[in-house]
Length: 195
Ligand SMILES: C[S@@+](CC[C@H](N)C(=O)[O-])C[C@H]1O[C@@H](n2cnc3c(N)ncnc32)[C@H](O)[C@@H]1O
Image (cartoon, rainbow, N blue to C red):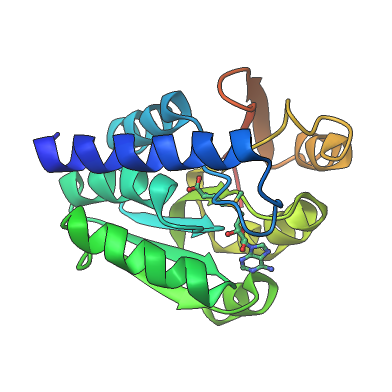
């Protein structure tokens, strides 16, 4: 990884830690994934050679950088969905600094609506928006996921009670295999095994 990108990721990690320490209200904070989860997603995308990647919940683009770096190596693309224009501006600037503007497409709006206009199949999906919407996102994106594709959902340990029904939902689907990885805030990794 280039020195400038390592520096940028560090800066964003410090910003996120500072915001959490100061107790800034949740809707204003960046709420980034932890660095180990960023690296895990990056490794998973490279190992599976995923090219079409979707992220739900961009924030300031911290996780998007990890996804974008892997997509670039795979000659792929990341589509990322975000509703907050202020965070989109920050993400654009961060992705530009990371040299990923041509790899990432940011779509502004409510993801529950913008998902519906996506007209391609994805190999890899990362869900990291509001917990009450996870099941809706899963149901909207599952038909657009390739067989052999993965859906990773964040916060399954940190918000275990809120996401209990999501976990039950994905695990009871006969077309999936799903497992919890207890890294970061807890990642539920779901594989689509058949159409
Ligand atoms: C936990 S943060 C994402 C953090 C980001 N993935 C990272 O690790 O850098 C959740 C984001 O989802 C966005 N969001 C929440 N509901 C949304 C919706 N319905 N459509 C699009 N974005 C949404 C929020 O504005 C917020 O930026």
